Amino acid sequence: MKKVTIYTDGACSGNPGPGGWGAVLIYNGTEKELSGSLDETTNNVMEITAVLEALKALHEPCEVDLYSDSAYVVNSFLQGWIYNWIKNGWRTANKEPVKNKELWEELYELTKIHAVTFHKVKGHADNAYNNRCDELATSAIKK
Image 1: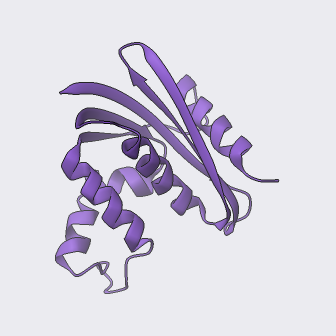
Image 2: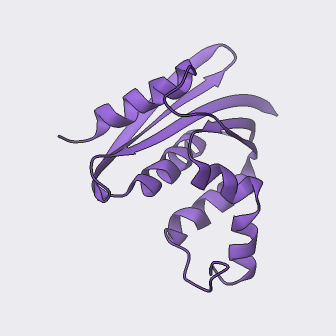
């Protein structure tokens, strides 16, 4: 299985407001940058979308090290929130409907195709790839 490293970030101007996402995929020394935007969205939607779009760009099942500064995205897998949401009919521990359910469902399906290991990185710090994703996300926001 091919090993790919992915960095992602999402950004929003206002929350909700116009948003953008960015991703850098690294395979065998080659880097590919992706980005996109939505007119009216939230920061969390952009964070999930960045991961979704990066994984959808893979042409075959891969072993993925995925780095994000979004505790929301990373902890949903590392702390098992998503598995509890599924088990509870897409309800949170407080019995509230899970926000962004459709995006989470799509992301969960992609994690069944790819062997994804999630890693939390500190945002706006010294990680060059995370900073590049932040630049891609913020520049994608339609002014």
